[in-house]
Structures are given as structure tokens and as C-alpha cells.
Length: 406
Image (spheres, rainbow, N blue to C red):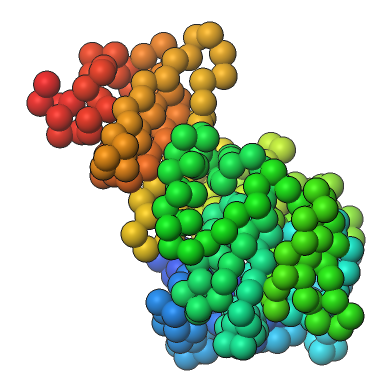
């Protein structure tokens, strides 16, 4: 008899997990996917490209309903799971379905984090998380003149650029002292800010929204320093909050997210979890690379006939910005943090190029690149492998080709 494998959530990590299953001997499972959203799995990373009119919703759908039918996956769309009964091994949905499982996978993702601003419930204040969010923003941008974007991380910057591409005058508010303060040092961030200001974006840094202004629809925002900004719409993009409630309410271990081990197993041996709703060794996840590795590890474990399971480990992640014409690359540390570390830097103001490596005991611990990122992948390989690069210094700053030839 086939085992009932039920997956709650149908985001990018579920899409990847289904691909991983298809590439392995998974015939022992009858697979069911239950999703609160009305779409098949789609590339959430590309929502900023949809907002900036560089892609359409249709092009970011990775699995349409025919794919699920063709691969014998039962799909329930637009139906959120409301309860997990661990004793009877069932889930209940908002539409009243009761679905049995032998093994349950929770992949409910995350939602946009809220900010402690007053009047956050006014109309035309949007999160930036789903296709529905993006479509609402595009519709409002057609009639808006001014917008406020809250958040100076990757998502906030990409949202600001997307609105600017729709002809909206955008001011970005960020509580950090500089943009991408977790991924860039101040020098690289200043270069990024200058580039974006030359494209018409405005910035209020080291500041926060105290209250939005308006009766029914948002008309502006009052900042913590008393400054007031006018707007016809606002986007809040200040990070994510794991959608872990369904698992935590069922008694699974965890606090802000569902705890998993290195094989993506929860405190219940019949339930696994993966993606943005989980916590592993104190770390939660929001970037694609670790999510892909979650999916691979879980698929390997559930299809153990294919050999050994590769346990998940936390590892450095390289990040990039998806704004056309801007090249930046970051991984690991953004600055030396103690005396045993030092920074090697090159800056070409005329070419608008900046490269910095943080070195400790001859090994790369951090990478910050702006303008020319062609050697980013090479630097990242050296960082991951912790190779000694002493013999390549200082030529390593000029890139792989030059350093190897020197």
C-alpha cells in the first residue's frame, strides 16, 4: 500500500522538493500538496521583476496544474490548513477537508514582517510577498504619484526600483545607517545609494515610520524624527516572519519557527519541515540556497533506497541585487571583526568599482564587491573551501585571471 505523503504549502521550496522526489525512487508515496495560494509553485524571487515590468506572472509560474496531474500529485489550491491532528495523523483545511497522512511535510514559508507603526491598516499599504500583493501594487502604481518603501534590504530596494519603473516617485525609509547594512560596508553602500539616486530614488536613512497618515487611504507617513512624507501608496519590506503557527500549535518544538534537525525532521518522527518556517541550530532562512539544500536532504531521507543522506549544515551564502545595471556581490563578513582579521581593498572611483576581502590566517572570511563582480563566484569558492590565499595576495583583488597569472 502506498504511503500518504502530504505537503502543507506550495512555495519555491515545495516546488524544488517535488523535483528532488521525481529524480529519485519515490514510487512508495502517494503525494498530496495543500496550498493556501491559488497558484501552482512559482518563483517568488521574480516578483520584483514582475513589479518592474521585466517579467509577467505567467513567466514565473514554475509548475502549472497540468504538471501536478502529469506527475500524479494531488493538488488542493486556495485552501489553507487550519489544524494538524498528530494523534490521528490528519490535517484539516479551511474548506473542511480532512486529509490523512503517513508522513507530513510542513513548508508554509513566511509572511512579511510587520513594523510597529501606527495606522498600518490604512488602504494602499502593501506587503511584498505574493503574486496577489504584486498585482495590487501594480494596479495602485498606475494611479499613484508618490510612494514610500519601508526597508533598505534587498526586497525593499527591489520594490523601490519596481515602483520607479512604473513612473512613481519613490522615497525609501530605512532604519539602518546605510543600505543593505547586513550585506555591504558603508563604502559600497554609499556607491549603491549614489547610483540609485542618479536614477531618481530618494532615501531617508537612520529613520523609521512612526505613523502613517490618512483616514481610509494612506496619504503619507510621519517619521520618528518628525519629518513628514506624502504618498499615495506604501510598501513594507522589512524582512519576514516564519509561518510556523500551524506546527507550533500542534505541539511541535520551536519558538519563532519549527525546530528541525539536520535531516529536516521535527520533534514528531512523522512530521518534517523545510524552508522559511523552520529553525535549525538557532538560524532561520530567507534565501534560496539553503532552501534548496533543505529540499534535497529531505528528499534523500524519504527515499533512502538511493543511498546515504547528506545532512543539512549551515553554510555561507552569497547574495546579489536584482536591479538591472547594478552589480554587487556579498558573502560572509562585511568588515574585520577582530585583530586577527584584516581587510584588503581596492577602489576605483572613476570606474565605480570597489572590492574588499576580509582575510584571517590567509583565508577569506568575507567578500564585498561593487561594480565588477566577475570574480565573485571564484572568491566564494575560496571562502567555502577555506583555501589559503596568502600566495595570491595582493593580486587576488584584481580577479582570478590576474591573480592566477601573477
